[in-house]
Length: 314
Image (cartoon, rainbow, N blue to C red; front, side):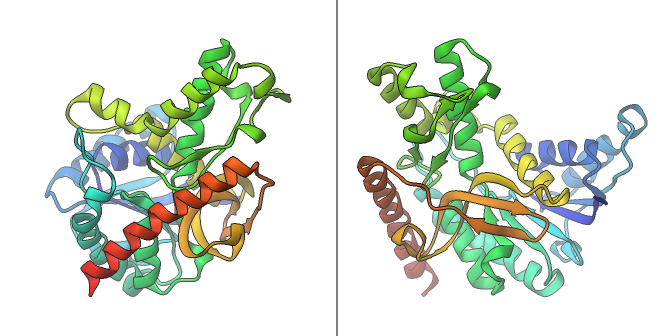
């Protein structure tokens, strides 16, 4: 399938810049604009990536801008801009300030790129995606948040490390919010078809689940300054590629629920099919009673943040 005409990435920090590099090298768009408020940052990174084209043989044309208006006519807009988590800071702590940032982005997309798909990355991502959809008024198919794709990759990595096998042989999925109440689904996790519950003792599985939930925080604590961006940008790239190539991938992503899993009017990570038109289908997995209870708890955590957002927006 032909590349997208234009992709805009808002936020030229570590995540946005690395994502731009991955997207350009895969020729997923004919044009890619990197946007940031810091003069010189998006222009410099775009030029740097562009100068690798003769070596890596891609055709994407990159440019940088400090104007949100330059999202105009994009097929896909990826929102990565926002404050990064610091040690000891929860995602909910970020809510107020990042909502202020995201509002301007959403208004620009609504006014300048009314047909775009929007991939939200800014944390707390489930709440920010809800806010973006509220401001844009876009159908739920066109506002999607990257969450479970990254969390599932971490989960699969830790299972692979535990067993000493390639993580690519591990099939696993994480549902729920992108935060401390995420729900790694052990009942649907396997290694080349063998259920993980037959391969790993329960106490080790619980340790893997706990490490997955704290995966982002573990990296924040190690780095001291900043947060993860290699695995997050790879996860976002997987979603961008699924959209650009119309791959109909079954991935875990945060979307607006309208009755699925008994939940209404909130974004939460669930299994979806993703393609050129965005959200194609939501799958309702058969969960164990503890998994379903954990998913409900995850939903309540998002609902609490939505109440905070509503109070801030009043």
